[in-house]
Image 1 (cartoon, helix red, strand yellow):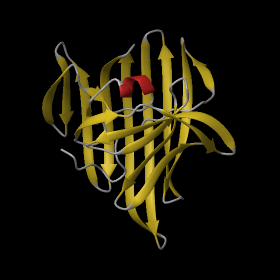
Image 2: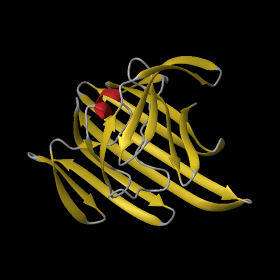
Image 3: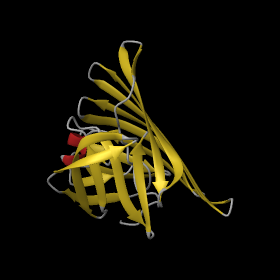
Length: 213
């Protein structure tokens, strides 16, 4: 199942951000710009709340591609992930991919995961991973992934990292550069402590980039 939504997959990319107290936990808000061939087409906002062993990740992605002042493509996605340490407990998401809609719920079970997409339910074993890029070690530890954005699964592998100097907003980062291959071909740049700085891929002849603000 290799056909994917126009923008790709669930790229939850975190960057250095301001942390604030929220109840007994700590909340961070991460913001990204999305570019197509150098032109800004959307935004990606991730809010992470950590409270003891529990982590909740809220994601909002909004993309609008205009041609001659007319909206030629629209993508909207919202999602909530709940984690217990490194184990995914539940994901709930809503996606509108230019009129094609997906309501997806993934729930941990005793034997793995149960995912429901628009009313259809499938079971997966405990080796499956959510393709969610907000933590380097979680994504690099997997080979088979499910999407919380569209109705897809992926077989993927990752290169050993190269060290790049990456410039973003007039700031230089010493970044770990990984290449992902298999059902999807992406490039990923992380800080040394595992926060993504940039995600890049090609789609329908265009270069798509998610870059921290």
